[in-house]
Image 1: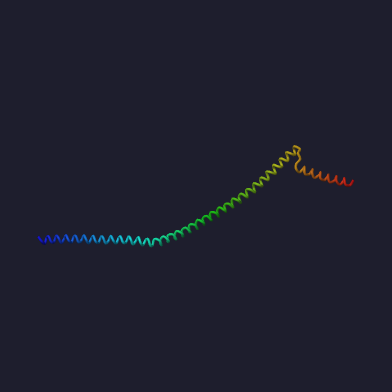
Image 2 (image 1 turned 90 degrees about the vertical axis):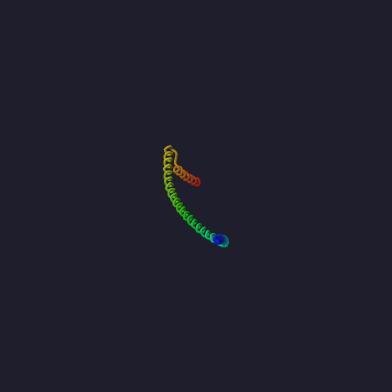
Length: 150
């Protein structure tokens, strides 16, 4: 019976020792996890500044490329607008010239009809008045010569 009790005590002691070993291992592992976390935090702090600087440089490069692309597209759009504007101006000039020619024709036709109507009413035209004025000038010049000779 003594051996049974001793065996039981020995088994109980081994169980306690196993539990202590497991507990010690768990504590050691937890400490390693804690230290790994602290190491990651310290490394991130040290390398974080450099990584941030790299990100800023990369962002500046992308921004520069974006601005260049936008400027190229704006220049292309402005070029297209200018060419379309020139085309429209040329078209407007052509139409304006044609309209002016037609307007001149209409104006001449109107003047001829008004002159014809005035002539039928017995009102002299501008050319008739100018011709009469020229004849009067000749007569005045002739009268002056006759008056000087006397």
